[in-house]
Image (tube, rainbow, N blue to C red; front, side, top):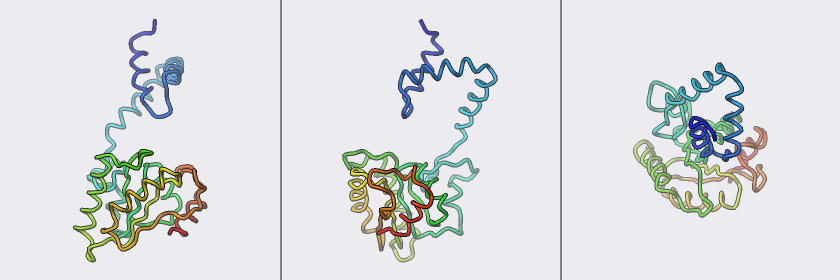
Length: 200
């Protein structure tokens, strides 16, 4: 009944977070009715994502010529303090507070079981190597575990803390300025600032 082009669109877009088959179908029809100009703009925007790189140090996205992102290459940032976050949008929220000037590690979406995926362990191993190779005192000054204050966030925080306890003089977590069950991505800058200030 549907043209193959629409079926393919639906098949691809329903795999995206928060978009199921019904929303993907509605989106397809909405885009078609928007006209060729809008479709060309969207196609160009999606094609532009091919130019985006993932930083090999912190795993945040960037489009610089160099391999590493602007945060990792910024010499004015503190080199011996690291913040572990789950999503790129969490990093963006933390940066908006202007209260943190260290480096990051985007660990990626965590499971509710508290078991790290193999690629997440690899990311932690890269952080361990950075600390071992670059810290004069052989340990980072501080590692801040900034995961969402949920049950599974706390569980994963404990797992990550065990993994990194030998690599930092201090391991802290965000203070409870964010309500239990809340998400860093949606917290306002003032709340996040308090959480950073009150980290434990």
